[in-house]
Length: 212
Image (cartoon, rainbow, N blue to C red):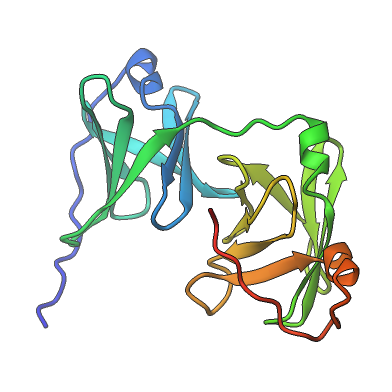
């Protein structure tokens, strides 16, 4: 196996705030169920992949950026009449991940309240509580600090290093964590009240339901 060449410094260029604003928004990869937010702060673009994880994007071309401190290139393209696409390519990799501009989910407090509840996972025998505090959702669990949940697209919320994906917004049977467990599809949680209504023992494994 040939060694991967070390990343080299790239020459940066100046782009105006008007040019940078063209790329601001939420980008979504449906295959991996991941979101990246692009913000404009003090005349610079920053990429946010999870709560508290923000990296400056240094322009190397009119539509191409290098993450500051990480050898990762982001390139924006847009076909006529189509959405903006962003390719995410680590240095030295022959493959890249494509994210598509998506409409951001902006629920009101009433909509957020529909996600609150007590959820249990038979896979890791753990209980998670999702509560509404000061107009935002917060996930709480034993021996861990509370984590804020930020809406991305409908029924998906980003937290710290994982993404809770709700299986159903209306029935609220539960959610799964992505990719916060050892299983490829994450760990499934079901709402405690639903489990009790179905008369199922707390220790009985629950059937995973795919997202639709």
